[in-house]
Length: 304
Image (cartoon, rainbow, N blue to C red):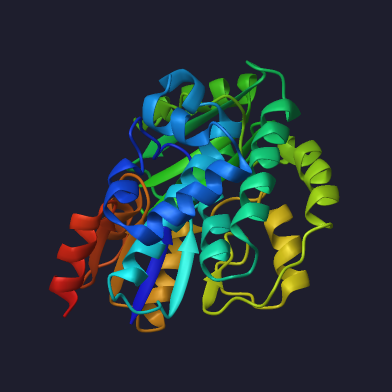
């Protein structure tokens, strides 16, 4: 069984999607539609400046567009529909576009607003995030449980968990964790994503999402909130909102996919972050990043 994976913020880079545009008619059609929906997006993806591409409101639609373009190129090249899909944070939206839950144009406009609302929810400098490495999740949870303003944001792999919250709370947590000889890496992000501090963004996006029609996905799409698939459109609508303030349960998602018999994990879009997380979480499976027509061709040949 095959699962399609779609990355979240941090996988963007200048030039993303250019090879897909040049080498795949299907990808080119997707990216042209993205440019029509959000004029200037392709120039930003291909020429930068990098600081502008890094802005949350730009990263999110860029990653969605390239992820879906890579998926379209894969299908055009003869790839079969996956049995399931999952996306890390923003990537869950890309998974739903690929599954037909919502249109590309609606998805792009919504994630741009999502990015704007998330950035505006907390003043710059008031929030922070940090990755905690090589510390068991349960130990981490116990250590930060009594620190005000700190929450678990991402369960990325058995040895990588991300905390999020107020700048003061995260700074205090870093000191506590370092005292336990944990390796902690502050993240260069502009807001405390996947924490309760994002509640204002959640409520602002609710009004926009309520105006968009959703459809049952054509394959199972795993929810970041539930770590299992949901197919009812109105339930998906609520989960996409809850996702903003809830942790990404990536480890559980991968474990559940493997439990359902998935042995091949294909990452569509820019970068290969999720391919790495699969390798650090699961054993006995195959993971490939498909970011260009050549990688797609090589991947299909290997799967044949």
